[in-house]
Image (cartoon, rainbow, N blue to C red; front, side):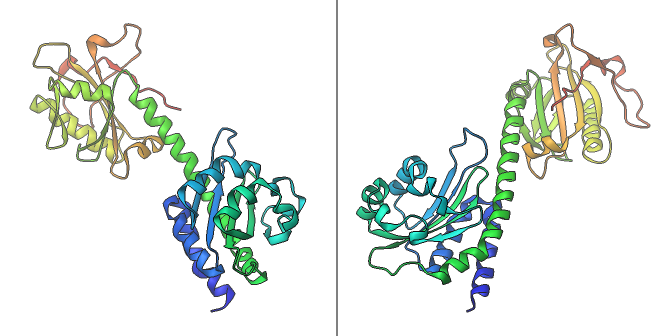
Length: 325
């Protein structure tokens, strides 16, 4: 098999791992087989100063991996070496650190030699945030050579692109986590449903309101109003918001005779859609009238086109949809 063909076989694994980080070990296993490495690892650190980074490795015992990540990575002897090379450079053996210098280091004497490792090859994938690829061979093996280095050089551009994708996915997940946290702390109920009103997600405030089964309940996983006419309008607003409409508002009468529940049904903004998954289509905000602050801004009720007013003045007094950045 040609070197180029071998690289192409590995590229597919790289891009799979970009979006599903748990696949990095599978790529490293295939790479290790291709270059004859006893151990291989990839270390990722995001640009944020407080990010501890991630390390994925094969051929290393978990404790060795942990020690390297939390101590030796920051104290590696090649960190200050000009030979380490610019971004995208692949270096082998003495081009990383001359062995006479290496054998006097703590990394070699306390980490590599006791575990039988001697020969190294590394790639500086990216300077920004830092990302490195490393491979090790044991003391009784021959050193890495130009063939293995060339294969890694062919892979570096793909690793750089994949890490950009990986970083963007990481940042998006961080943002989604922030959105979920904010929604969970809303003082009003927030429910995400699909187009058929099946509940995908609900924050604690919504769970507390629905759990009372007083004006709103969940039946066969679908969000429902207590009274048939009100429930019919609720289902129509959800379907409207989940399609190309703008949803609307209504009030749900409570059998307990407590003040009605104010409900706003809205299309799910793209940023919020990530909090519920592929089925998430509509956002429902629910507030209890008797708990709304007196200075809250109110929005008028809305009826679907052609909808006759069957709820009268009950469909008013809804808290305005919060503006989420």
